[in-house]
Length: 433
Ligand code: GLC
Image 1 (cartoon, rainbow, N blue to C red):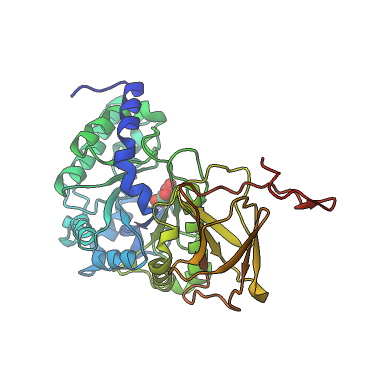
Image 2: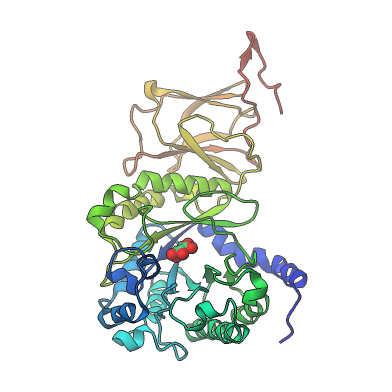
């Protein structure tokens, strides 16, 4: 196979990106699953490193690894109920344990408990019509060359072959896979050390439509802000733990106070939907693989909310202006597409009315997402919503979406942050900046 140089490769990726990424840009919301030997201890997926657990001692966890039947189905079922559109599973985390029937790595779930978890995961995703992502760690604490590769070139060659063979298995054993999600390119530096340019081209040849994240020291298709919802100029996906403590399982009773609420998750989705990014929200299944209890209520509520309000999330595009915070009212968030502006009301206004600043053009209509009209008046560059109910119409999560309909192209917020009646004079319609 001819390996392209970096510039050619990137040109080729750019040429096919819109087509490959279309489903992902539409999806906006996915589930990350961190499951492995570490789940049994419930003390973080970096346990082996953080606690300096000797290799032989850590390997003992493989003897007690015993996921209950149907656990992957539980994850997928919850993801579906939450309104998520794809899943990414840690097929092999830094501990080096493969969750599939690997022919290359005997330290695997088939040898431990007779189960190919990756196969079960893939089947579950397909059953619930979710796109499939494989997380794959570059760093490996179990393979003897996983550290030596940094200073011994022979070891490096062996280790790179190992990494490529593992990923080749993943991309050939299970049919169509949608995302390859690399993680932690330690201990080597840069894509050259990891030979990512050539390997990724060979892996892409196995799944030409696949999308790859930016953690093999190449930019590839999308960036991955972690524990931080930060928009970038390119496609991005924020990955978030559920409790800000650990990606792996921790005791739900103790974790609960640190977990996100449905409202906080909806707020994250608002940022993603208005900034052209995705939210990959993690669960760390219990030792037996069951869904962590603390995630069930918030995710189910979000899913119920998305059933009625998904229109404001899925497929929504990045706003053009980033220098003005696009808040038509301080208590709202905003997403948009070509025809509509969606106001996400977190706090419902009292007194039955509210103004939206900055709209020079009148909308054609203002409605709730079920189509119920809202009375409004357009004056100058202000929309006045009238006769609003006293309490949030949304009873699921108390986040009500109001839709402003425009013609072909919904406007961005045109007006400035200047006071509307500067020195008593009305600037209506004139402060176009
Ligand atoms: C990290 C951590 C890891 C986690 C990942 C998720 O870099 O090493 O444990 O899997 O981020 O983004």
